[in-house]
Image 1 (cartoon, rainbow, N blue to C red):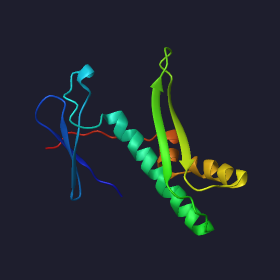
Image 2: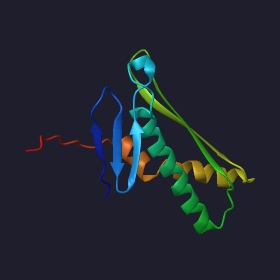
Image 3: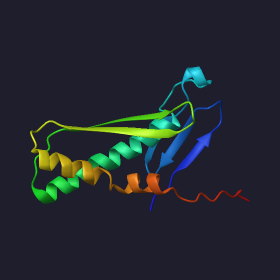
Image 4: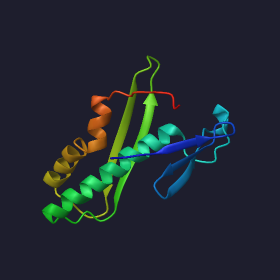
Length: 129
């Protein structure tokens, strides 16, 4: 379904390769990186935000709802007890009824990446020969 290769040669900056797409991921300077690209958690949030926006656009298209510009704001936090959370805020440039807004929030909670994050998943790690 999805395949990504990550290559790192120097410090924390990594080259991410997915099909014909290439970009850099890194850590911020405060964490010892060179800030040449988004951090791993920023990429995680980007995945969730992209999936949310795409899913809402698909759903609205089936309902013939005009959403205009969709903005998905995301924030990852960890509190003093090490509890992690993601806060997601949706906004739309077109006016929507209260019922439409409520349904879109409900749909956002059911996107594929949301479900994966909430459910967790096994990660098998092996060494290449």
